[in-house]
Image (cartoon, rainbow, N blue to C red):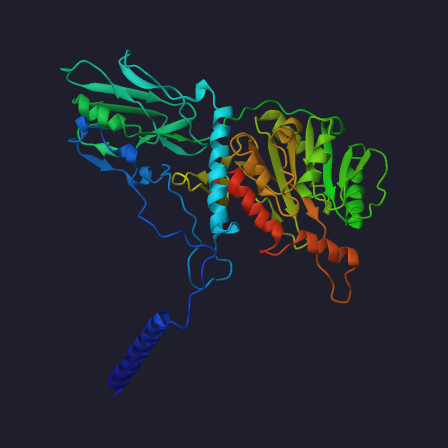
Length: 500
């Protein structure tokens, strides 16, 4: 009897599972229940092409190659697209990726004109900025190794196929060997050629040997170089005169109570450091005191325009950028940030911003621009993370973008600049402008507090706070957001971007 009950229970359980499965399948097929659409779906088109660089020359077409998928996947394919995390139910704390199609900021006819104008401007930029040293030159095989002399470019921590490698040796030898050595990266191969022995894949020294010259040359066509780290030097620690080295800069708009709180906290720890304030409030209030410089701008001139004004008045080697609602504490140790810049080739180093909840964020961001198909534009990938730890500085890393609390070399910030067309919504655009020339670090142990944004329900918001919120937090369809997407499309030659 017990066995019968168990069998019956098992049968009921199987029927219940089958019913749930059928219900799920019918729900997925139901036309009335549409899955939530991603912010942007890439245009339908032909499948992504294979890398043309792996196609052998006719004389090597008969040589078999075993492709290394993990290496090929690291190479640029010049056909990027942006996709969201996917359709379906989003779970709490689940990592999400949003995709934005920058072309949607234009009407179809307007997009064609903008794309043509962008391409014309890009080609003009290349003609102005490129020099003869950017041209790819291949050393003839007099050594008898043929190799590139100049014009090979690789993004930091990315991989490329090395062009022009070839061994033009006399035939008839029993064994051919090529040794490659790198100082700032490693070597690998996109595919393994039958009859070639490889030693040191993924290492700074790679040796290729083969009894067949054709096989060795086919293997040389598949050699990849992988950038692995930035060069960082070390030196003895020194004591620094912060007032002589650092100016604190900020941009304010309507929040004078928060600005005065910031200045008071700075004076507790750095009483003689100069503070430069750019202010585009409608009715400016007087901000004065020792080592205070207050510059008034036209009303609503904008976020990045204010940054440019403030930085233009800095006369010290370094500038510390802060928001007007930050609060200095004993953990806001500027000496630590100065030490990093004095002892490394970094141009900018960020700290951490601590909220009232106790959570601190460094907002470390990796920015990658992937090449797209001809005429389409490139794809911007923004994701959390860092490249590697900064040797000699525990708690510090090398990354591409940081939180809005950073110390930087003044001349380097002026060189990159802040695009004044970004008036209301902007942050990582500065780091995107500096990508490739601005070396960025982040140290989590230098912390500034963020004034509380918690509003008690029995405390009403004043008119100034309401006005600030309208300017500071525009909607996704606001004109400023559309203008930013148009700027990214044209200035950086982007078709889309993804963010985590």
